[in-house]
Structure formats: C-alpha cells, structure tokens
Image (cartoon, rainbow over all chains, first blue to last red):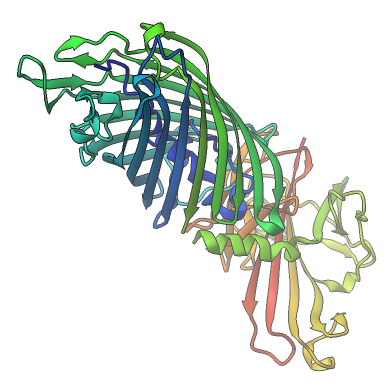
Length: 342
Length: 225
C-alpha cells in the first residue's frame, strides 16, 4: 500500500495561471507593466471582455533510490493544464481549468511500469482585483503605466468538480495495489482561497515583487477499492498551505516588435498536512518544503511563453526516508507555460 | 479596447516628436520649440517662425483673461503677470509625397500621399487652476500642483470644447503613459524636477482641399522644485 503524499498533483493546480496574463494582455502598455513569474500568482486581472487561453506543462522527474530499499518508485509525472479565462469586469476574472495527467511508476524493482493517465478534475476560479491608490479601490477599467506601479492585490476563490477517474486510476491492477497518489482525480471537490500582492518598483520599474499565499482544503472520499476487511477504502488528502514570493526583472523590451523578455526568481514555501487513510493519519505523508524557481518569460504581442526549473532547496518531510515520489523529493520540475489573450 | 490602445500608443509617437514649452523668468515668459529634455542627438531648441504663434492668452487664477505685451521675435516673449499662459502654434500644412515630406498643403504639391495641418497648444500653470481655460485641446491638473514632489501621482483631465476627451494617449516627456478613461482622466506620476512636459494629441478628419486631417497637440507645463 502506498502511503505517500499525493505527489505533485496540487502543485500544478494552476494558481500560477494568473501570472501569465498580466503583461501579455496589455500590449504596448504591458511592455513596461509589472512582470509575472511562473509559479507565484500575480495580482493582474483580465481586461473586461477579454478571453485568456492558457496551457501549462509541469514535468516532474522524481529522485530514485535503491530498488532493494524501494521496490516501487515514482518515475515521472506530466501535469498538463489547459485553461480559459474571461474578464467579467476590470476587477473580476473567471477561469476554468481542464487538467490532464500522466503518471508513471516503476514497480517490483523495475519488472513493470504502472502508468495512469487521463483528464483530471475540472476546476473553476474567481479572482477579485483591487489596488491601493489613496485608499483601497477596485481595479478600474483603465490604468496608466504609473497606475500599474501602485500596490495591486487579488483575492481568489476556487473549487473543483470531481470529473477525473479517481477509482480506476488509483489501483495498480497487476498487484491490486491502491495508490491514491497515482489517481488522476480527487473524487471529491476541493476548495481554494488565496491572496496576492504585487508591486512594480517606482524607482526602477524593471523590477516587480510579488507575494501569493493560498490554502487548499480537501475532503475525504470513499473508493470502490476494498480493504482486506471488506470495507471500502477511504482517503483524505492533507490540506495544503503555500506562501510564494517572487522578483521579476525586465531584461529587454523592443516596442516596435512588441516583444519583452523577463527573468524571475521565486521562493515558494509549501506545508502539506498528513493524508488520512481510513480515518488514520498516514505515515510517509506531509511535510514542509521550500522550492526555488528560476525562469524566464518571453512576451510577443498578445502571447507569452514561460520556461523555468523548480527545485526543492529545503525540506522537512514527516518521514523523509519513506517519501520517494512525494513533494520535496523531486530531481527537478520543468515548467512550461503558454498564454494568449484576445 | 486594449488592441486599440496598442495601436494608439504606437501610432501617436510622431505627434510627440517635438515639444513646445514656456519658460518663466522674472516678469516675462519665453516660448521654446524642440526637445525640453533632449537626448544625446537632439537639439534642445529649434528656431521657429514667431508668426506661427496664432493665439496668446494670459489668465488669472479665477480664469479671467489679462492683458499682456508680446515681443514677436524669436524666441517669442510674453510680458505680464499671469497665473497661466496659453499659446496656440501652427507650423502649417504638411504633405507626404514620393519625394519626401513637404511643409505645404496637398493642393500645392505634386503627387500628394497624405496631408495634415499641425496645430499645437501649450499651457503653462504657475498656480492651481483646476478647470479648462479654453475650448481648445487642453490638459488640466485636477490635483494641486503646489508643493508637488517627485513620485507624487496627479490626475489630469483632457478636454476639447471644455468636454472630456476619452481614449486619447497622454505622454510624459514624450513617452506615452496611457490613455484617458471615459471621464477624460489619467494619472501620471511626477518623475523629475523642473518644467513638467505632459502632452496629448488628437487626429481629426478635415474636409478640405488642403489636408486630409488636422493633428492637434496640447502640452501642459508646470514647475516642480
């Protein structure tokens, strides 16, 4: 029975989608507006009446250990996320995300692979944007480049619906092993609340600093998988708390080509509660991780392409020696995002 | 709307290519044309024909016109005690041709491609006057300009015929900062001391044998210590 955390699934729930539209959406003005990192959500909202199309790959390569110690080891995960956003008001944006996951595990000392793949849980999110300019106010329809340098904030709320295959994808049918972290769905909705703050430096507008914190709440789900005593398996993923901060730097702007290049450095702290299996706190799950992310983003007209590498730089996992394939045990994560605004 | 903004920001660059500004010394004002803050290759002041100035007004703080004395030589000088000075300036008609740009109306050149009349205004404020003074294209600060400091943000109103002009690009030191909102307002942060150079431009179609349109440019000057 695998009791590891639901490695990586949450990490790609696309809070970071907000990080992508802020500049690309604003065209010439955006060529000098606030920057947007890869993982930390920015405080930009979508222009009223505009549509954002978004795609992201979070590729995870897990650290491997000796087969004698770990006969079953997570190998690599592909977290694809497709999204669409709409600017309901200048201060209110709505998003829908459709994830597709592929997870590969090498089992029995390399004798066979267990791969689960499929669409995961569709999620929705609403983002309320406001700013501080002689008092707090909702983001107005129009802002000058100087207005964009004010402190901007968003409060966001999201939830999922359990459209992914949580039952079939969680079971290795070769050995009838239940592995919650191989599922492509949670089986129950989760909810998320978050808060961002963004400031472009007035003294040097090439720099933007960003803060983003959020909390995700999960609920227990009963699976069709049967325990040895005949009861149905119950599993609850540990709630997650994140605090992210980022600094972006505008390296290059070519207005006549409507092109901009940014680099970003991020520190993302993550606290995962223990999972609960059949109502009992699961061993080998949960912990605290600090990731570092180095990346860049290229803007061209109304599109942006971001690429970065995310590495765990510090961790205190609850049972670190048993948590192969859990968050904090990545070799690396490769993040690629693309967004276009119309 | 955002696409429109992009086009505007790129298309109006030419309209902000030269500045008109008013310097105050003792009891007179001097009108200059060129680049208020020249880059390495720019000449600060360019000689102009004083007869290009077609309107000169001096206002008191309550918006009433005051009499002045004008010295019509280069550079133009205005003598008087004004809380605001307003100047209208036109370099005339300009026409693009296959042979280059001519300072003539289109009915006086061979093979005209595109032509326009250039009309520029500059308003200098030396005290707070928070309403438009003329019916021309004009920029008015809605916040106090007294004791303003570098880094402060001021709301400006763009008007034509004393009515707000929306979606027009406003520049600070020739650099576009954004477009006005539905109420003709835009916020701009003061970035340096000295004479402030805030400008906007409008291109209006003209039904005439001389030009296809008129480009109106308006600049606001005030001093920050």
